[in-house]
Image 1 (tube, each protein chain N blue to C red):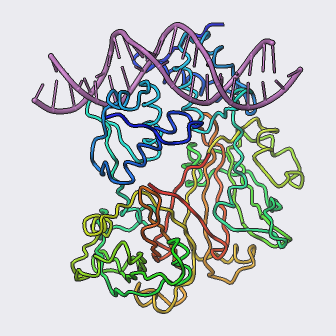
Image 2 (image 1 turned 180 degrees about the vertical axis):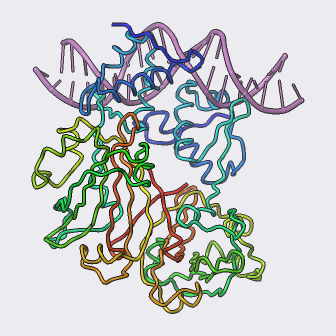
Image 3 (image 1 turned 90 degrees about the vertical axis):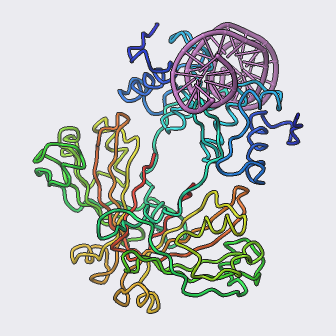
Length: 244
Length: 244
DNA sequence: GAGTGGTCTAGACCACGGT
DNA sequence: CCGTGGTCTAGACCACTCA
């Protein structure tokens, strides 16, 4: 098979190749975990030289969409950042190790998207969304209170499952039940005094400081899939970053 | 001139080239703002092909040590993140724009390094350090309270200047007076209730939540140059990050 | 041993910045 | 115009994985 590359001819070939490969990942022509064709195969398909093909793949590796394994092949990377709360909170079990916290769905409802949610999900105001209220616990102790909003259109399959069956991680559920793969995310952190509702949920003193993590999860095509607001106690918060 | 590359022969050539160029930036053989030799010149000096030279330079660009300008050359990048507090705090002046806050040195002293400071600076316990206590203000209003520790050995020139002459940015001062260039940094964020001392400095209610940013500043050779702890009001805190 | 990605070469021509 | 970095080619050989 021989692919004509449809993009703007003025763009460099490696860029057009990059875009073409990215599009095939986005439309799940190749799925997470799949091997993409070998470099020599791509050379034939796209009539480019090996160096050009490698440059396009290099870019996708740098962007986190592909992973290379010498001798094995190049694979579509499976994002695994549901445990990203560890990046912000030093939660650990009583035994000291890091475990996936228990996820307990407190409420599930369909509603018109509140203004802020519609804006975050880039949907028209009033679009129907699924709202989940969720508590995450370790050793029976509450760690995080989460509000999760999903566009109903893409995630209506979730309404047909008992919330007790949701499990502790939602992203695998989104993938299995709704065919929606989370590829990247943007997170915003702020600090605030805890509200009465969340103080009760998290067993904190009224007015205690909490860190709020707002996460917009995106698909491979960078369409917003989920907007989530997680609150945790500020004394458990710790974040490390390297800057240049 | 022809450079023999001294590194482990088992390493790829582009890696050895990368290390060699990085070393020359670290020892200030080339300084911030300088152009490094052209690609064709490096090809001759190192007896490598253009592709290999480009790969080494690509890495250094990705690491933030070099910048390329087509038609002009490749330059040692000047790190400019003293304004990085804007990454964590949405400080702005009354007029709404972002200005460099005033820096006011409250105290300067020489002391044996406290344990945590010695560890951060990777110095033996009890090494003499310079400690600066500094307040940063915008429109006369205190924004940040900072404690800054510097190894006395490298920064003793600072003891000879009146602290009123320090100016609002310290890194240019380090460069001009002490020949120390900050190339990168690691920052750790935590939240805590403000102490009485800092509450008074920052004009906050006792016990109000503050965000603490601990920054370890490193030279091009990744030696620790400065350790700094900055406290600011949590209600001014906001941080955005993209994850994959 | 066959097939994969990793390293490296020695050129060519293009696009951009300054003179 | 010349010199810079940017793109691209068509190979060669090496290192690793797996049957």
